[in-house]
Image 1: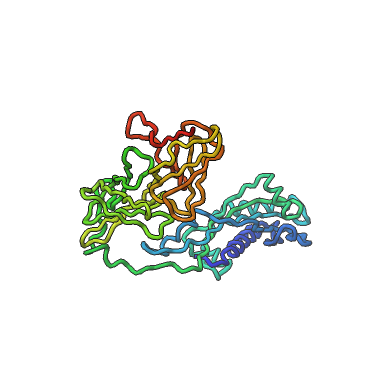
Image 2: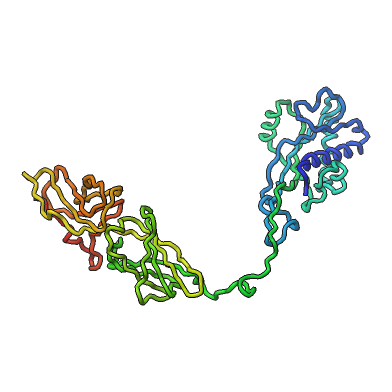
Length: 408
C-alpha cells in the first residue's frame, strides 16, 4: 500500500518515461520535461520542452468502499484506502517555439504512453523509492483523457496562459493507505450454546414474537376505556403475557395482564376503566412474554389511539334567547382531561374551545357564541383525537343519536 507521497511518485515516473521517449529521437535530444503550471512552464526556455501538469485529482469510488483484499480477514474491520484518479495535461513546446518541432515532440510522447499503458514496478521504484506504490495490488494504468474543445478552453483560461498543443491523460488507481488502525477482534471460540451455531427455521414466519395488528371492537376508529382489544401476531404464547401501553405524557408505561385464553397467534387485553390514570392520545403498544428459564421477550410496537368518550351532556337541549345568542354546554368525559391537553367541542361544523381547566377534570364547559337554533351532532376533540360519533356495528353505519343536541 502506498504512502501519501504516491502522487509525487506517479508524476516522477511519468516524467522519466517522457524523458526517455524524447532521448530516443536524435532531433529531440535537447528536450527537457518539466512539471509546472502552464503559465510559468516555459520561463524563457528556447529548447524543446514537454510540460507534465497535474491539474485534477478525484476519488475512485470503486476502491473506496472496502479495504484492500488480503489486509483484513473475515470478522475484521479495515479502513478503506484513499483511492485517487490523477488527471494530467501534457503540453509540447518546440525549439524556438516552432510548432513543427512541438508536434514532433507531442507525437513521440503520445506514442510512448500508448505503448506503455501500465507503470512497471521497477519504474515506479526507481522514480521515488520512499513509497510502496510499486507493491499495491492494483496496477497503475495510463489512459488518454479526451478533452473537448470546450473543456480545453476552460482549462487554459483557468491557467491564465495562451493555449499550446496539449493532450490529457488519466492515471489510476493510486491507493494511499489510511493511517487509522484496523479493528481485529479475537477469534470466535464457540457459536451459541454448545457451539451449535445458528438455529434455522424452515418457514417465512420470524422466530421472535411480533404483533401484526390491533383489532378494536365494533370496527371503531379509536379505543375507549373498558374496551377489549385483540392483538394478532405470532409466537405470543408464554407463561405470563403482559401488554404494555406507553404514552408520551406518562412518566411510566402502564402494564396490563393479557386475558386468559390467549394463544400463539392472538392475545386479548381489556383496557382498565381508570379515568384518572389514563389520558386521551396515541399509545404505543407492545407485548412482553415471559417463559420459565428464558429471558423475557418483547414484540414490536404498534400505535393505538385512545379516544375521549362523552358520558353526559348538560343541558341536552339548551335554549338560546330569541334564537340567537350564547349556548353553554357542559360535557362529562372519560377519561379525565389534563390541564395541558387541548379540548374542543365540534358542534356540527363549528369548533368551540373549552373554557379554561387548570386542573385535571372530567367536566368541560363550552360556550358557543352566537349559536343558531337547530339540531347538531357533537364530537369532543382532545389533542386531535375525536370521540366516536359513528356507530359502525350496524350496516350501513349511522350517527349515534345520543351525540345530538337541539338548540332552540
